[in-house]
Length: 131
Image (cartoon, rainbow, N blue to C red):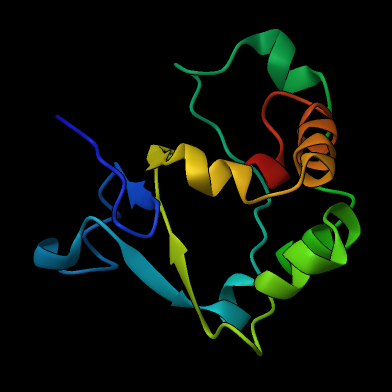
């Protein structure tokens, strides 16, 4: 199937679980940002996609949890404020890790923030902050 970013520069490519959203709204799912900020996972296993070495490379649980703490400790103040749930009460969430964005959307973020995200995600191959 084809995936194309929307006019605001972002699109989901995986359908969320059917117990969370009706099929007619399955391509995107908006969450209350204050609830998304509390996101935590205890573990995540899809053995057909994970190598044994990757699973052992780092503890799964993030040292900066929940999600709002990861955002505030990883990104610049400008980016963190863009994700502030008080200012932006809804947040688009994609399930399954398949999404599209535009080059313009990527370039809107500072190089410092991209480096910080890269550095945070290199902690391991299957880590909480990667989800």
